[in-house]
Amino acid sequence: MIIRTLQNTLTAENIKKVENGESQLKRVFTKIIDDLGIYYKIGLSTDFTGKLFNEITSTK
Image (cartoon, rainbow, N blue to C red):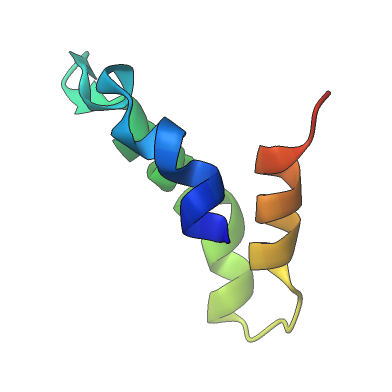
């Protein structure tokens, strides 16, 4: 379900376009790692994957 939902985003040409030495996809993953990675390292058991999916698919 996640792959199907993100398929258009992940296959869009803009996601691979390099600006300032990195792609949009890399910036997204870097932001996720920077903001959420610390919680995984300390062993916090929160469903970040579900929250991230809800944020990505929300229609704000």
